[in-house]
Image (cartoon, rainbow over all chains, first blue to last red; front, top):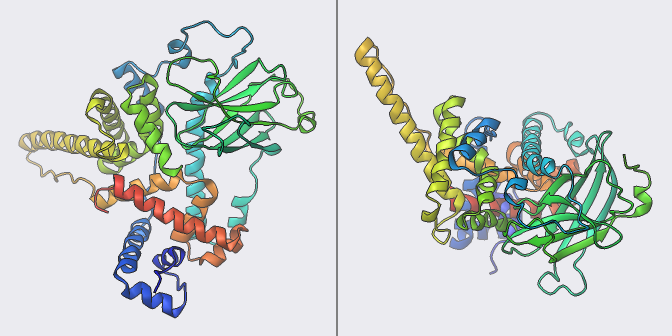
Length: 260
Length: 182
């Protein structure tokens, strides 16, 4: 007899009565399925645990300052990667450092906020859940798919998405990438129509996602192409010329967003 | 891709790039701080331990071998050691107070392995993509069945089932790598 479907095992680990009677019996008698179920149930038990779920808290801001001071790292990127002249036509985002420094904090805070909201609702009524799935106070201006360049070998299966969101005050680019693990890091760029000028939005997080603030004043009707590059750890701030995926924002949608 | 994220951080850290400690701190700072806070109970002490952990991790980064274990697990071990040191330090202070004042001082207790594991689990839950995290949170902490979760979140049943299966598998492999007791 074939082993119990992993989805059924997962649901049973959660305490649901999933699967047919035969499947249930198999899960209880087959040593392999039974041990698998026990491991998964162990995770569920750990999660549900005694009392409230453990909370994750971010260390206060000064904790990092003390660490950076003690080991002498954590200088702002501009102070460490300034070797080599900038490419003539490349314009660096003026507030490049701002999105870089803020992004991980924001993402994590959002992750935790989501978790807490989920917990509260999970424990309380389910009526509020629909609220959670509603869009936040930003509106989606454009959402596009990012695809590898035709000549791409290493990254021919890579894909990505870019979603542009606008709040009353700023424009955000939410980027995801699905690409193989590679030495270096992935960096997100806005490319101008001349094919030469570009603005760096910043690095993707280790999970290949990132949310970036588009520098105010950026003319997106010109800088309408999004490019993700694989950058080596060599301190250079230039585009590595290794493009992983690209996509173009629909200029029509951007017309509605006037650059400041 | 799921394992790639922490793996990438570990690779960067092993390579000793100056930016790597920033990456490691961004990724694991909350985990380390939360374990320290839960163990020591006060924010200043938790902050001290957090600082000690990352400074010590950076200085001894050559001894980290990612073929022998995960970076998260390594940091959890350092955290537990530093917490134990801090508790011993308190005990010493307590003993001095006891000698001076004659009052009984209760010995501090390190958090159970299970508490550490639960914080590791919370850390991995926080890494999940939003929609999957919500599904897992509801699956764990609400009384909803997967069918009800699908209805409530407006997701296809198959998506919810697959989120649950993969979510559990991911939490499990994280606990196997970084957990203490699991």
